[in-house]
Length: 259
Image 1 (cartoon, one colour):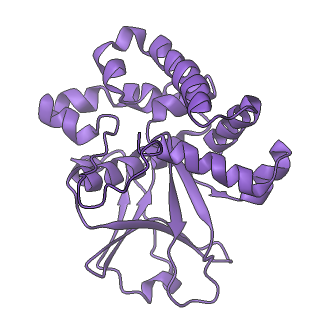
Image 2 (cartoon, helix red, strand yellow):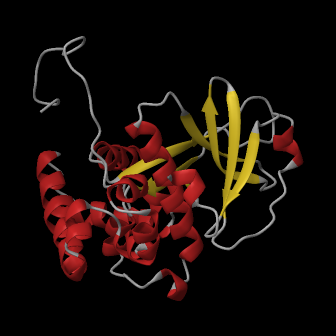
């Protein structure tokens, strides 16, 4: 609708982003015990409302969402004719969650130009399928300043794209799924509460990294995501930024961060 209107709506609109359900919303609607009991389900099938309300039919609902919404509605809306390229791009992104993404490498893999890749990713972002994290940088010469990571708003959609709904304990990509889940939940909570926060990841050329950096009122909070409880040392080069807090979010303590 925004694309089709010819006039500016500046000063006459209020935008509200409707994400999949958040873990916090489910806890508030039920109990923390009930939400934790369903965590394995959420990490396989996500938290779209219809999926949550009809768990027995979750796989069919997700596959229909992918086939009808992703592969038909979006393609028709954007007038994209090379549907196989978008499908392959989605699969490549699904296998690269938590990793830095190169538009040029994706373009070579898909045999299209990098500008088309960026256009497709922008379309997927505007359609609330994926979101991008930019790299955090202030002054270190060794920092990767233009890199990006791409995550999915809903793990269920991501798993439907690669046709793998295995529970997390049986997956090779469990670490990436956990990272995507926590990053998405933190950002959903921030946007749902209309909080003035900005999110990034951080990495240097010598591969020192932070999974998620949150900035609010010029204060820096850094997070690492680990499925199992594990001590993680703050990289010395990032310590120069004097973060207010550095936390590792794992299976045993995640609730205090996303509830």
